[in-house]
Length: 263
Image (cartoon, rainbow, N blue to C red):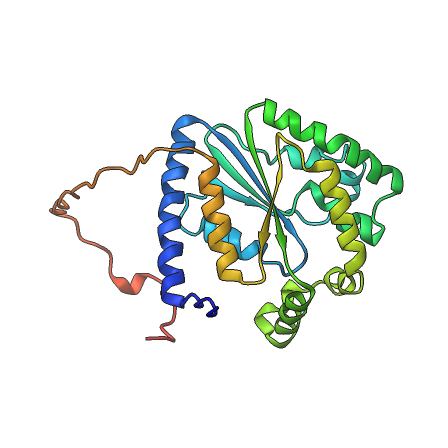
């Protein structure tokens, strides 16, 4: 059997742009129909979540589709009900919210790294399915993606980040520590799935060893989950500008310009 032909960069970019055009149509439908969409992106470090989110939002209106990537909780937030700080970021009618990591931190990094107690973890497993059912009953379309990456590919991406200065910010001390706890993360993920892979909000696993294919497959799947119609506005003709009779602009010397280092 011949080996499957590798997708070229040109083919990838063409396929991606076609999907992004559909995302624009979906965005307009969400806005007109007043839909409320939440998409959660979870997975191991370097699994490609951020790259997919970036391609999803590339041509969308940030007033309609926004990204939520929360930092570590403050001391005040730690004293709140666990889901409280996430609730304020949920969408209103006509909005799409993409969570770059979410309340599932408790079942992943917090569990493995010991940032929560056994009681807090067990309570999360009990309450999370009910919390998500409440969201769905309220009218929110909840979509959950898990990006699956192999040990070998994660190691390759970590090494790449270490070598390239513009990528080093992506590696935190927690990320480094997680490398030695691969089995613990696998166990935590499996247990998380056993409790939270519910009918009302199932987990969708994205194979992400090949970044480009993961992006295309995830975006294609996301589009398929929400029926929509094409509301692309008709082309319009721009009117000619009116002449500014009698108006004299101030001299350019009155303005401060950015130095043209590159020209």
